[in-house]
Length: 231
Image (cartoon, rainbow, N blue to C red; front, top):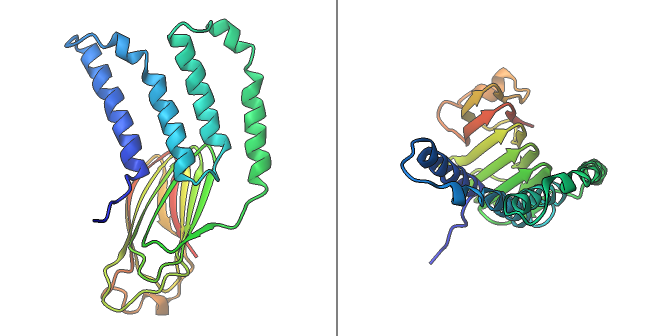
C-alpha cells in the first residue's frame, strides 16, 4: 500500500484550524478554553520542527528561530520564567537573523529527487527542490516569510499525459517554479495583496497549439507575497 506524506499546507492548515476553533469557543463563551490557549505556543514549536524535517534539515535558521521564540513564549505562559528576564536575551534574535543572512550566501545545489511528488516548506528561510523524475506528477510548496523554488526543467512531458499540478501557498514570501518555455501553464492562484504570474519570455510560436494541452497547473493562494512561473 502506498502512503502519501502529509503536505506542509495540510499541517499548517490544521494548526490554524485548531487555534481558530479554540478562539471561537472562547469569544462566544461556549466553552472556557483559557487553559488550552496557554499551550498554543507549543503548536508553533511543532510547526518549526515540521519545517526542519520537511526541508531535510537544509533550512535550519528559520525553523530554529520559530522553535526558540515559541519555546520561550511557552515557558512564559506556563510561568517557568519571567517575561522581563527573557527580554535580556533579545540580541539572540539578531544573531539568528545574521546567521540566516550569512548562510543564505552559501547555497548548496538544489536537492534533486526521483520521486513523482515534491514537497517544499520554507519558514524564515529558503528551500530549493529539483524534480528529476520523468513521470513527475505534483508538488506542494509553502513559503512563510521565506522562499521556495521548484525546478522542473529536467521533467519530460509525455504525449497525452495529465498535467503536472503544483499547489502553492505564499504568505509574506515567494514561491518560484522554473518550467520550460514551451510548456503551456495554467495559473489558478488567488492573490490577495500579492501577485501570481507567468513571467517566461515567450514568442508567438511558443503559444501555437497550447490550447490542446496543459502541461502545468498552478493553484493555491498568495497574500503579501508572490507566486511566479519563470524559465
